[in-house]
Image (cartoon, rainbow, N blue to C red; front, side):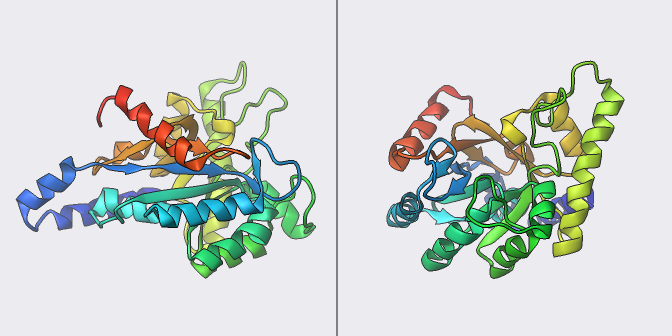
Length: 284
């Protein structure tokens, strides 16, 4: 499914190449800085590393607008990399891991109020469970599919894959990593089975599978990155701190860095610190 999407995007890129060749070569050499902010919950209870207050979220949205940033979806990033479709001058991704109910109850109204976009990285099993037994306001409460689809259909949110049931550390499991003593084939079949389950569910519910995979807990490996690429994911999101350089090379979409926005943090300083990491990183 997503392999076909990769082929379509690549074909579109080639068709664009029939235009002005010099302009195309110039575009391939250009790079765009892309900050990716990582949030989890937005609520009043227990603010900390993975929970920020509603007024902090609103402050972030106001500051980003005043500073000239434009929120985009992963679809916009893929369009730029594969087809050369222009991005805004200062694009930024707002990603929300796990698909918490507070994303619907608190974040969604703010997105509509400020006209901004967010990427919701969904845990499939949690969305299924809370669809059957919906709850609101408690600890670790997730949105059900009704809420997630309402956000997506509004045009203010995009749904991406955060695994169906690999977001856990138990029974020898650490996210998507290989278990101790697990052979390579068993590991690949286990990961592929999980990916396919959520991809199929997203396709059934929305007509589109996810283009992007966000690593649970940020645990990743070269082996896992290869499996995900073979599964057809066009981009992957880590929890590594830093700024991203976008180019027309699809490899720039693999292992993308993010900036964790925790309670009490200064967003302007976080972005400056992330950009400073590029001084010590080789250009793409």
